[in-house]
Amino acid sequence: MPWLLKLLLIAVVVAAWVDDAHAARKTVCTITVNSADERETLRRNLPADQFDFVELVERGRPDWLASACRKGVRCDALVISGHFDGGDEFYSDRVDARESLPVAEMERASCSDSCPGVFSQLQEVYLFGCNTLNAEALRSASGEVARSLVRAGYSQADAMRLSQILGERHAESNRDRMRQIFKDVPVIYGFSSKAPLGRAAGPVLEQYLQSGGAAEIASGQPSARLLSLFAPVSMTVVAGLTDGDVQASHRRDVCQFADDRLAPEQKLRFVHRLLQRDAAEVRMFLDRLEQYATTLDATLRHSEAVAKALDEIAADRAARDRYLAFMRDADEQSVQARMIALAEHLGWLTPAEKHAELVGMLESRLAHGGAGSADVELVCTLNSAHALDGVLASMTVQSSWLADAGRAGVLACLGSPAARERVLQAITSPSDADVEIAQVYLRHRPLADVDELRRVASGIARMRGTEAQVRALDTLASHRLDDRQSLEALTQLFPVTKSLDVQRAIAGILIRADYHAFAKPELVRTLRQHRLKSSTGQDLIDVLIRRLQADLAAAA
Image 1 (cartoon, one colour):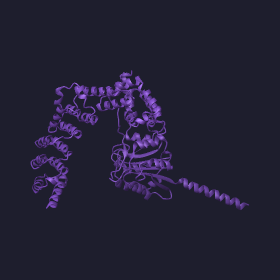
Image 2: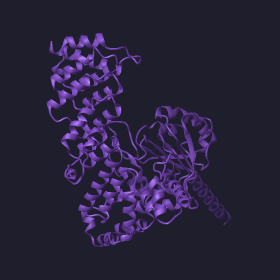
Image 3: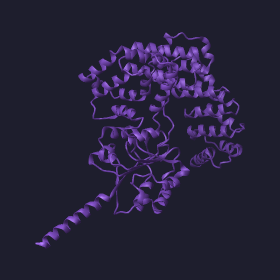
């Protein structure tokens, strides 16, 4: 039956050809949290018989990435479009958008191997967002790292060398984090600084695809042509981390925090091993240790396995002593405060011991150096619920500290009435640094009554037209004034000031205030006649004038 054998042979050949054709098709996965320009440009220009498209974002579903992973979607190329300025997540600037893509969720999916389809066969990743491949370090080894290594027995030279190595290994720039997330991916495109908006990136991408670039998509080879077209807007390319990379061990540590296959007690055992390393290296993991500590709620802490693991950490006196010595030597007060809080979470400080450490930290800072706006921000934040108001009674406060606006700001955050009065005086200081301290303080402890408000408003009105006066006016704007006397003091300043920035700041206060209560024809005339010319055209002053005119017309 030769004809039957021929028929079978033809069937086998056809089946193999169909399988090859199917295998040749590539899947482009897209994660569109902001502009769809890049996705639609690719869809229009890639041959439909060679490429399939899958949008992973499901609108209105917060677990869309996990959903895509469960579906077994397999991606040859991944295109992520979204703003990325802060480096923690891809997000949208659209008011109606709720979807985002946190870096922590990307790490979880990558480290847990729970998303093998999306991540495992990727040949290329396109990161359309600002700073996605920025190489600038997100953290660095500060002075106390080298000092800690010296205490651990290293020579000064070795301590400096190891400090540099730790800094490089744990810097975790945006570029480093993307290389860790997309492990073994041969080509990752992104931007080292500002990226083009979708409406600008789309045409450039289209030019690339129409000039032969379609054949290069998902090839696993970097395209010199694509990089050339996007070169004016800082596009760059890297490869994903490999097992032979110098940062591979750091990724393994990071994955111990992110891998959701590990039980809480397993993660805690890793945390314990980490805490037994040099305190200098522990410091480099502070962010992740803090984040993990917040996941240990009361229910979890009372489970038998977790409680046992926590008890073992709390009982490790050697690790505790190294940690506390490093903590007390920290260069930055904010780092010291964070380490104090973590020590309590780890069972290394009782509430009373934590209180004593905070008192010691604040006394040392106030006694040995001036405080700035960052210190005021820290202490006011720490005392947002007034839990530290009693600290003043435990401190030895020097009367001379009130002469310094920064120190006064710290004491005011701790509840000192005299220090508050000093800070209210600082808001009318000719020193921009002093006004900034008052601005930070008043964000946390706003003006309390009308007398304070009037005193501050009249004092600001008497300032000379400087950057400090503009900052002071901006501080008042956040209070949304409704006191007529205070508003009149500022409207009287408008026609006499020689500073356009001061006039704009006054307009910012009035537009946020209840301007319906003071909308009068004479005020509109004053604003129109005395406004200083702006080289940029229409601004906030014009918006205020239009609103006042509309309010007057409606009342007529």
